[in-house]
Amino acid sequence: MQVTRDNLPTVLPKFVQLLKTCDFYAFDEEMTGINVPELPESVTDTPQETYNAKRAAASRYNIIQVGICLFHKNSENGPSTPASYVARPFNFVIFPNHEDDSPSLGRGDDVVLNPSSLAFLRRHDMNFQSWVYRGMGYCDAAREVVLRQNHEEKYHPNLNDSTEQRRRHAQSMELLTQEERSWFDGAVAAAQSLCERARAAVERAQAQCAEKGSPGAIELDAAMDLQRSGGREVVIQPQRNKNARECLQRHIAQHFQDISLTFRRSGSTYHGTFKVLFPGEQARILEKECALRERELVDMLGFRLVFKALVESSKPCVGHNCLADVLFLLASLDGELPAALPEFKHRVVQLFPKVFDTKYIASRQDLFPAGRFGSRYLAGYFDECGFCSANVRVSLPLGFEEYDPLKLSSVGRSAGGNGAPVHEAGYDALLTGTLLLNLLAEIGGGDVTTAPAGLTNRLALFRSLFAINLNPDGEDEYLPQSGALTLQHEKHIKSHHIDSCFSAFSLQHVALYPIDDMRTLAVLPLSWTKACNLDVEDVSGLSVQMTSRFPQYFQASPFTFPAGTKGAFRATPVSLARTVCKALRR
Image (tube, rainbow, N blue to C red; front, side):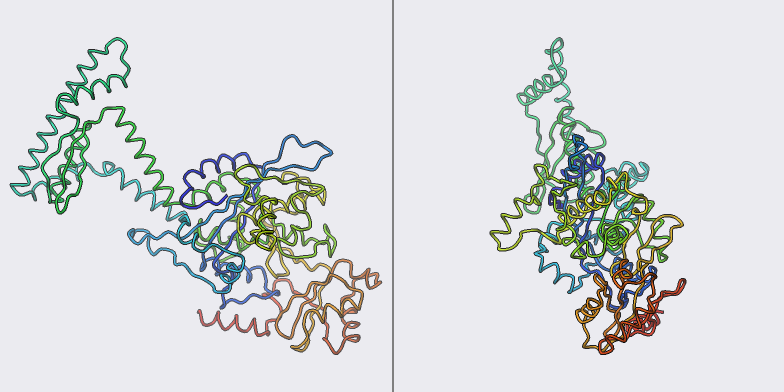
């Protein structure tokens, strides 16, 4: 379901209701940028260094879409049947608020675009026009306080000091000319006369309907009586002066609660009209005004209301390679990101007590053998299971059929492709939640409530050797437990050459990470000793054998990541560039 500023007020109550009853939700985001040039990232970065780079990106760029998919487990599941879930994906389109008329809010968010990220989204048919014209606003916690205060003061001026209000009214009255004062007195007299006629009409109607008359019937009889005796409305003389009109409006609002005053512009003057309002009409008008005020507040706060609902629910949530998603959420909707990684972890657990990362789970070779998944991206992982696997079945209810496989397949046939809206946040959130259910079922972990504790609150770091542990006092995980090799080679040596060398050595599923043009990191699978017919892990011996067999391609050496250091390869061009940029910023 597409959610924009147009339908957020109607969708939000239903979304919150569904959120309260769901088993878990999945999330995904699309942003205007994901990397900053002055902080290049390397596979050898420590978690703190990776966090610094992603924090800078989240503080600079903007969110375009937030996908939230709510999953409800069917209670009719049998013990021998696949687990069945109903998924409801919401695709929230958000755009920064523009608050030029509110100095108390400070400078608003700039829209910063990264050409590479936008080109990527354009290739996947991102609707940028919908983002700009229909995107809902959002704010962080500090701005919400100011926006709510401004909204309250706008519609409840009587909450201010009444003495000050009377003083200002008296000052405004002193500015009236004799002609304007005469107009003011005449208008007040007309209002007094209309009010007296209305009261008399109500008294006559009450007397006639004393026994069986309902309030509605009494008001109807009084309105008809008033219409016969001169009408419910009185038009007063036109007035050009704005101060005079405002003085009359304040006086009527304070002394004649049963009469409304409206002005209609006609050329350079304004014609005023008094109208009698009976209690039933006043209640309906007040209800309409309250709805309009609530709509205005929802427009001002926008996705911040959705974010607060997610936090208040404390439901388990799941993302895919979601460190950047979490950073962008907190930077845009919570507040300034802390500089230290431990403080960030603490804040995340405060807001989202139970987080799953499908990229981290799928990369656990102790749970899934190397080569189990043919691809390392979300759609590739999902293709291994789909919506109807042997373990899990996911369906979409009426109103959420936009991502239904049958519809997507028909769209794909007409368009010449597969029709899947990949990299639309709502669709990717649907894939992420479905993937989690299949991963947990495959390892016998049940569902999100019975999943092993070692799989929760761990976030994979994109193209990194680490996964961060969000749990208090939890240590970040160094993933290459089976060992890794540093390969030094010429620039013309590519990844497929290196991969062929390992294949010739009977080593499959070696993960290759480029360090720079002349260095590559090769992370070995857990089964490499068995493939090499070795009884013990001897990475040094393997490096010697690889170098002696393929000297024309590379020189291999064991890779070590010393505990407590700030990262290896500190003399590479990438690390030198990072050091220079940090020095320039100081």
